[in-house]
Image (cartoon, rainbow, N blue to C red; front, side):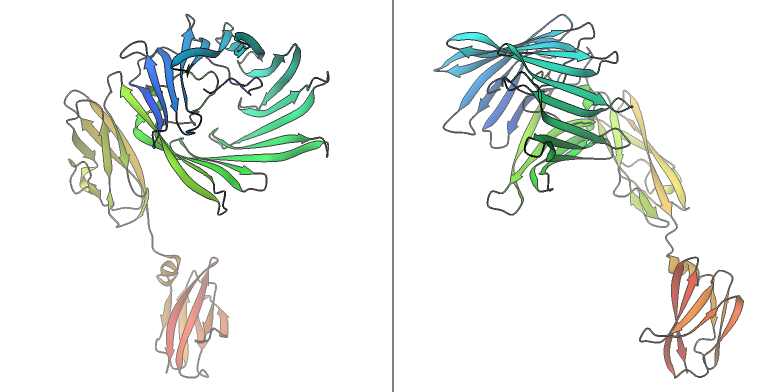
Length: 468
């Protein structure tokens, strides 16, 4: 981290990480051009006790930055100190640090940041955090320069999701004034989809929309895109996230990030592998791709056998084939496959069999993967639809005869309400209600091609007839 901002907006309480057996841990984070590199150092070869992060940032050649952020913990695994030693004149010097305290729920209660002033590490500011009985932060206060400088209040939806954050600041006047207001929105699955950030305007004495952030998710719950736009909806920044869906995020040790410092990971169900960074083209033309950021992991525990099935479409038409693709991961790596129902597959022991359902409706395919030591089973359900078009369905239930016609045509249907006879220019020549078997007089029509347009339950179908 470059520095600790005295009025940095840090709101998330850091909880102790539950001890469990992880399969992976982050080893490095880097830009694809290698100008930015975070290397994660652990106390043990296969442990999750992160001791420090080595940061090298050469993205600004005139201001190269290199530092080691070291972490210290209490007996509950809470970070009690985050200290930054910056490389200055070939010597790593302690330039700033943060100290944290926690309550019995392992929720952060204070944060004190110290910076170098006149050669000494002096207290910059102190945050105090308060929570309700459910462990939700309700408010916080920043003491700075001997006064209550800034405060925040948080409110929640009935389902416990964060709704509103309100920030107020005392600019050494003795009175708190409105500063920033953020409102959060979610989908039915609890995924944050939008946030609206407002700034208080002293000129208009009201909140004015400053920024809109939108988030998109895949079917697994991984955040796949974040876009930050102006109040008028012009995108300024975009992140596009990519995942390895064979690895669950719950099996990865993610290092504590008490300062919510770069990088901040999105909501994820699977292993985040990289993300694209897009920025506004300063010459106009909208967002342009800048570069990728990459995450590297190392395995620290046994990876159990797992499998997932992928298909191009989960809905097909009756009679159409579909290829089932199973990907196995972990275990010994020596896999065999057994699919059911075998009678609908070309090869029930293939990794990628072709299925041809014989009936409309839902059909579930299940595969058992065996690596010689253990087995795992996974399934996928395909919706098979009878894809006869609406027009075909109407025409299959109506009789129009004779065709060609000389004087009269007969329309026989129990489902068609009325019919129109149209010429080749689209003009309606005649129309008639249809009650069972109905006769339409075409004796005075000129010879040529006509179309009978049939109406049934709000849908239409057209049949060509020839008048001789």
